[in-house]
Amino acid sequence: MEFDDGAAYLEAFRFPEDSPDPERYYSFEHGNALFVALDTNQDVGAGSRQLGWLRSRLAASEHAWKVVFFHHAVQSSAPVDRDMQEVLVPVFEEHRVDLVVQGHLHFYERTFPLEGGAAPDKAQEPDYEDPRGTIYLVTGGGGGVLRSGTPDARTARFESRYHHVRVDVDGARLRLEAVDRRGLVIDGMTLEKTVAPPPPVFHRGDADPNGALQLTDAIRVLTFLFLGGDAPSCLEAADADDNGVLQLTDAVRVLSYLFTGGDPPPPPGPPPSPCGADPVGSPALGCEAYDGC
Ligand SMILES: [Ca+2]
Ligand SMILES: [Ca+2]
Image (tube, rainbow, N blue to C red):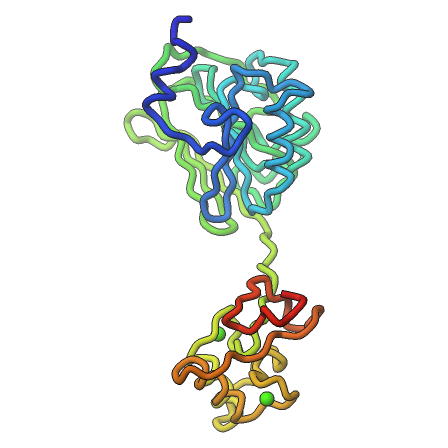
């Protein structure tokens, strides 16, 4: 085979080995984003191992952002592999993939967010808030001979130019830009989504509550009791000695644990609690004695 089945590529790079075919297709996480790489030179059809792995990887993800990238395009105004399109596009829509990054076609094209072949929220272009559908990018202007194209109703932007694409993700906001050889931004869009806040964490004694036992927790209790400060948002958590009353002894319990080797505050108590779950179950917080940890 001309390229020895990618031997030089595999030798030069190391990729995550978290799939049935290590390094050919894989995923990685960065912050609140999941990235999945597929190998469209291998079978991605119905019943393939790669497709099964993709489904399970996406289904297990609770990331705010999901990005999938691979070589052959499945959505473009140019002809694409219909078989692959029929299999992959419903998977992306089912699992609410935000962005699909494709190559192969030597131009730049960005679709509106697509759902069921339509672009229900195209009116928001180019700054989207919680749009329905998946955005497909063709970024094939890396050096090969450019080709022209005929944008269609799905196309938000088309440029037959050499370029690269940069994507910045900051919490609930994604900013995408395509930049040409001269540094000119030839396309830009933003995507904002409503990201559910993380579930509350209940550690007894964590009066502020930020998931950790610190000096500030004792200060919070003392400020409330003696200086007219705001009440802790969850009195059950601030009640460090678990006697049902918020008193000086609660601050003392936290200080004693932190600085003089005293016992940790007792565990939260059986769920559900108004202060949330305790997903850590830290022995340091006494959770080893607690079934719910
Ligand atoms: Ca705290
Ligand atoms: Ca108490």
